[in-house]
Image (cartoon, rainbow, N blue to C red; front, side, top):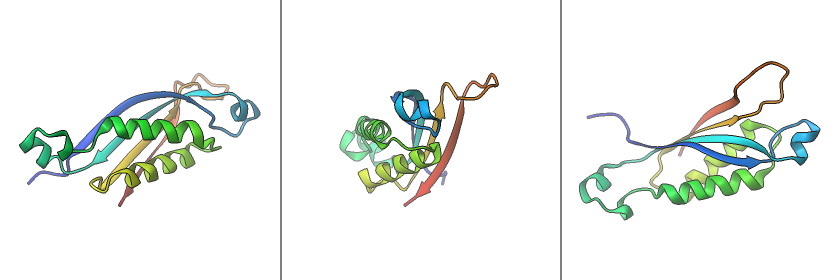
Length: 122
């Protein structure tokens, strides 16, 4: 048999407080999140029934809620909070990978993004 199935959510863009610098504590900045859900997609593939899979609309709503209310200093902490919320939201999710990127990283160099990627297993 093949490996685990995944639902891939790419490029969720939000404005949120995240950072340690003074301006990052008061001014929301653009962030981009990717979320991969490890879930058995066999039942949905067989039945074509939304109830047989994870509703990614509900997942993105929860990810956005966490990201816009958490106000963490570190991207690592934000990614961990998002992962915990996703796992708590649906018992069918066996594992989640969360990537969070700052789209305007506060460094002197010309850096497109700065981010983290974590994986959490139930």
